[in-house]
Image 1 (cartoon, rainbow, N blue to C red):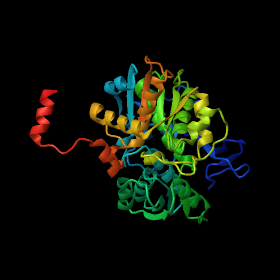
Image 2 (image 1 turned 180 degrees about the vertical axis):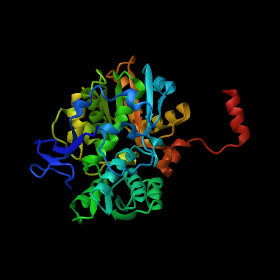
Image 3 (image 1 turned 135 degrees about the vertical axis):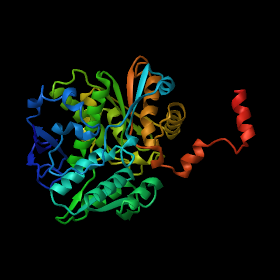
Image 4 (image 1 turned 30 degrees about the vertical axis):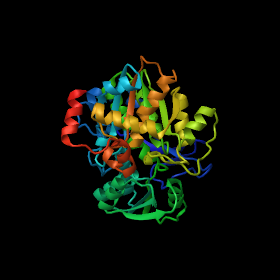
Length: 407
């Protein structure tokens, strides 16, 4: 059964046809979301019996994804869920899992959204795709554009983009434009630049991106069975946390789960406008003009999806916390050296946030937690991080072995 998608404004409810080339509501200017007409009619017709026998990519859940005549896929999704006992002990909880999105084709969760977004661009007969990025979005879009035979244009800050991500972007053939300031200025440049009919924006203002990213929620349901958990997610532009919640709510509509996670939104202290809003109880985001954190992927001061994310956190009775760079890097080291999972700093924020909330007594020590690791360690191999993680002075092999044998 193929469901008919349509677009709806998250504020005023105005609806639009799925084939309209539109990013914002024409009535109130708010963001749009994809909705699936007749989703509830799938109840009892899909589930593990249907999906379990298919290839473990995100397209195994095709009944709840847009129906494209030509899907652009690099076998994204199907990422592992690791039980991380050592990380659980470090954070102070009974059980902790890591959803490792770094094993997507370009090394980050962005591939889920790009598979759908670029497939939509092909369906709309676009020739050029465009995005602003701190790195992961750019490298993902470039790869999927290459697979689709489209031209890619990315707009990045002149400084602060991880070299690994920029290298990927260029390697996949994208054209790179620069702005003098951070991601927020780059996104403004993309949104404010007149785009021709052949051009398609693929930042998370594009609601089709969220449709791909929601599939991670389906995978967690598939792997865990019981969703009575805390789900800790790094937050930058606020799209991913809202995508997870969309997926969980769909699972509930389908009658596939009675329990839903409590979402935990984690930002870096130097880039925390969303967390500050949640903690203050406000309904209005106050942007940060000069966000600063070593976690470049979440160095965003004006998250465009904040309304969707706020709805997700509140509906899930969720939490929000901000963590310092030193704790982020400590969590990164824990995941790599004690669990064997190498993640970029932004990913480690999810674990750092759990530790801080446990120490504050907000998350119970008997809780089960899933931390989303959004990107691979090799995404962000900048010298500052390397210097921090290699604190010990140069030593000979004899000295190293001696210290290990005596410990």
